[in-house]
Image (tube, rainbow, N blue to C red; front, side, top):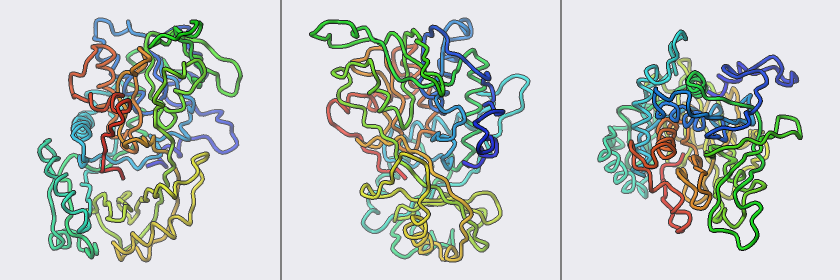
Amino acid sequence: MGQTLRDQLPAAGSGGRGWIPPGTHPDPRPPDEADVVVVGGGVVGWSVAYWLKVLEGWQRRHGMRVLVVERDPMYSRASTVLSVGGIRQQFSLPENIQMSRFSASFLRDINEHLGVRNESPIDIQFQPSGYLFLASPQSAAALEATVQLQRDEGAQVTLLSPTQLKAKFPWINTEDVAVASYGLEDEGWFDPWTLLNAFRRKATSLGVQSCSGEVRAFVTSVNHVTPPAPPSARIKYVHIYMPDSLEYQPVACAIVVNAAGAWAGKLLEADGLPRALCQPPLPIQPRKRYVFSWHCRNGPGLSCPFLIDTSGAYFRRDGFAGNYLGGMSPSEEEEPDPSDLSVDHDYFQEQVWPRLARRVPAFESLRVQGSWAGYYDYNTFDQNAVLGPHPRLENLFLAAGFSGHGLQHSPAAGRAVAELVIKGRYETLDLRRLGWDRLVDGEPLKEHGVV
């Protein structure tokens, strides 16, 4: 899926000249002011922008001035387009299941939501195929309890015994598998770039502005206040630095949405934000994840699900000609250096391949074809998104920390944050538990289905 975007990027050494992301002005300059500044032009940021204009209402369609700021206009390091594009209902937290169900419905009717007049219909190339989670004897009870929760939330998930699993997928080695869960609907994978571009095109058609630049500083209502500092503050300006320049543009704003993904935590360390009001720190960090592609002539066929092994290794089919994508999240002690997106090819040879070949014996003869790396916006506190208002920066809203499931939850999360901004409350889904309070109270809301 990450290669979809690569086909559209400029050749190495071109400096980015000659390629402009669709819907973007060749050299967009930030305006002097905006009602809402969305920091981060990934799929979550553009979803927020889109929903802000939708919920604003047709009568005031050009009333709210929304600005999306993206520092990487080529999306060369963007989590969205470097993901494997999955969507699933199989989570352990009710809120995540609810967001998945909302997003699945949204994607099913995507042209009703994101279609633009006089443009071609949107085809996200959705491949309906369930996720298949394998559980060892030690984790079987937990998986069964999670499946019951998923069913209670309306998800269609079935449990398979080792015998049933082998009958349905004969190519699986069921050794050490006690039970498996398999999604029957609203699961599969799709093209991340198409969804991102669809959100952006639609939002732009509704009047959303965008610019290339990086928000590195803020001016708040307490920047020039003598001690003692007040208990809260408002952001008055964001400073947007132009690409490859020391020049910046101050933009006056009423609302700021932090949708900066893997760099959302770093954004709250920017100049101008009172350190005392930014406690506790936002525990979101970039975590590098590798994706490997391979060919296996005798591998699983068209019925191949998105399989998550007992070991944590995963894979899915990529097309129809014996091609696959997969990888595995490392242990905390083995986290790779996130300072660049280089790939450790030994990681596949030593860690991923042996686990895959044990589960799917046909993969013993696979041939690696390529690889890339992308970022999780990893919430080290509980691996869940942080959504909603900041407790002490009164006009700052958060939409980050999805820890690998931001793409699939972007339609739901974008609407949720837009509801808070415009209406002051959640209306579609009650996501209050994903707010900042749990960080302040030190009470994690664990998601056990992080892949």
